[in-house]
Image 1 (cartoon, rainbow, N blue to C red):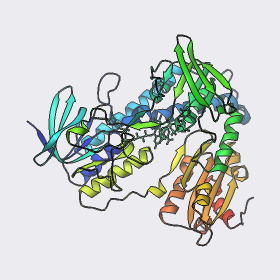
Image 2: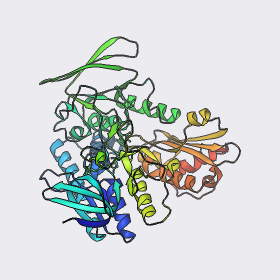
Image 3: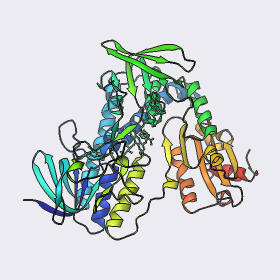
Length: 475
Ligand code: FAD
Ligand code: NAI
């Protein structure tokens, strides 16, 4: 017997579970299918983000930052600790507990919002009367029918051609989050978001980390001035990043991994490490979805093809998050999930792609929203720039964390904020003010004239806005 729903969501990551909750809030009868299993084989909704992405990486970043503070910075505050040691198993266990709290939280939210949760793999069977027939293959097999289907099946780590992840020596994000002991030497391929975050975790814990990056520029998508400042900080910390390399043969053996590559000068080079993280981007995931059974259109990268409203080529089938075009970010997936649920309910759900913030949770943190200086130049936009260094911010001095700056880019004629770029302490939190400002089409002067608490890091934001008009007060 099939079970009838208004909406079936396939995938319970940030895109899927949030879409399911929003659709239920809007009065629809909703099911969410997710196949992720915890170590005991039970349900672990939350997707990549909760299980092997945003949440566990931030837990390890926090632990490793505490360790680095205790080792290197407590003494500045007059605190002596003796020899500081790290129990890696305990740190990883804490991370797992944080993940479980989030898995359990989502199961609770499903109950609270009356979303029916099915643990197993969801796949299209056929177009059926009243919508689509979806099979759930889990501990038990179920058949669901729904008028509206939201696909939110996420993404998987991209492997180098011919170099499979064994999660013992050659690690994806999954293995990188459960290394059992600090490796002496850690290699990372790709100096993107995962490479820098995971490289930072294991460097702080004592690993000798080398990151090999294919492109000649560091963090090409980031504002150049900000990327330069970040690179200076990483160099000082001893996180080695080699740009412009061409990866050759990779051999993994009992003793570790050997990476042959050509360096930026065109010379043959090699890197021998205990473990190698490969973080060269992610690929949309439609494995097991049986998209072909209903003729769901996929693009060249394996992504589900959608329009600006997340509509696929099939009536009543929508797709959101990492499995579609656009940045692979949890909050982007969530916004799309909410917007689709609202569109199904006949409302006007909307996602503003121009104000999606990016954050890299290294130390210093890097965060931005809107266009970079190089993008504005390429677009031929006349702009004014204002920067303010954390070195001149009282709160940053009190924290002992004065690296970096806030940078504003505003339209030369109208003063509308076009981009805000931050490298420094708590950039991840500071960027929200810029997102709100840009969402309301604020000018730099608007921010410059708003009262900011003293002493706070957010005063650097205000001062950077003042700097657009060349009238900083504290620098
Ligand atoms: P996913 O989270 O991948 O969820 C998809 C879910 O669908 C999974 O549970 C999967 O098991 C399930 N599924 C797939 N196919 C089926 C099927 N046929 N049937 C049933 N279930 C299925 N983003 C940020 O914004 N901030 C961060 O700090 C951040 N950190 C990250 C750190 C790492 C190491 C990684 C790898 C990613 C990080 N991301 C971060 C990216 C973020 O995790 C993704 O953008 C986000 O998870 C995408 O959400 P989603 O719902 O589209 O897909
Ligand atoms: P990425 O796209 O951020 O970085 C990949 C890097 O690998 C790029 O610099 C690229 O030039 C390089 N590269 C690609 N192929 C290469 C090759 N063959 N040899 C050498 N270098 C190569 O991808 P990453 O780090 O894997 O992360 C995937 C996605 O996950 C991110 O794009 C982001 O969307 C998401 N994520 C977000 C986080 C956050 O918001 N804080 C944290 C971690 C991941």
